[in-house]
Amino acid sequence: MLQCYVLIDLKMDKLTHKDLGQMQMYVNYYDRYVKQDFEKPTIGILLCKSKKDSLVELTLPKDANIYAAEYSLYLPDKKELQEKLQEWLEEFEE
Image (cartoon, rainbow, N blue to C red):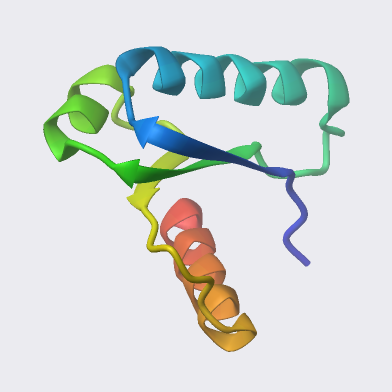
């Protein structure tokens, strides 16, 4: 069974490099001080009102466990959230 921590940050404004750096710091902290040896690396998810893919691509290392996505003003249903999380986990395992 895959076990890891998933950190989620909701940004009300535009996504900035500062936000990505902050999430990287949180992920590093959990990996160093909270995560157990048998657990997979921590995953960070930034949900934001708007984002620029180029900013995300340039700011994060290629193998980062951080994902940024735009959100709408409604929450998807439980099944859709589960499917998206599963998709991210599968990408992470590759």
